[in-house]
Length: 271
Image (cartoon, rainbow, N blue to C red; front, side, top):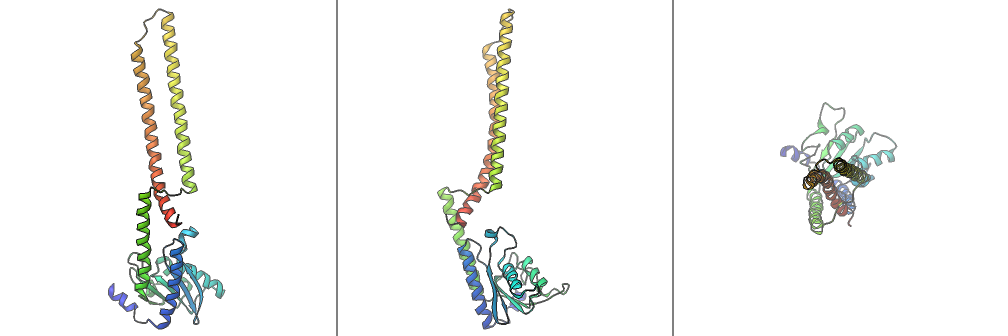
């Protein structure tokens, strides 16, 4: 794998360094917005026709990778889906999705900064750009301004870990999304309904106990020990309370999960 990576570094030129610097500027913009700092630009006939940065969190879209957005913009600018003659610059090695889009859009070349050991599809884990089974191959150059591109990511995640730790110490919580609020409201409604049923059953039991006591008194029958009746009611109440505790435990687990997400929300939005 290292040998394959080294082969990608052979054709770096001054233009690659210049355009990668533009991609790095986009990465910084992403970091400022709370996104993972990855930037990209598309060059056609010696000029930048599109540039973009990671917006997955902002757009709530799994497709909003930097290079994916940049290629979409480039297609709009050129008014065609084929990106023949284009070079895509991106600060992190493209994933399978973005590498696949490069194949489908027929790009000429891709230049990336840092390698991605967990998802790189252009030399690290896969080599889609040179897979002869596919209907298009393109040139790839990796490791351009690799240290700078890697450092931007390292700084971002180091800052994120520090902020998360501080948020945990401060006891801050994550803002629940609409679906989570609905889930919690439903859980509370269910608990209230069960509470009502439990109290109704307890009330019925008390009424029956009183009726039985009155009937026995009227007909001269022996009345059961009041303490025994009290123990029965305490047992019923204990059973009801146990049910409540189980339900509250489940709801609190949901709340804990949501609170962890809320911490990320505060960090991402600098709150």
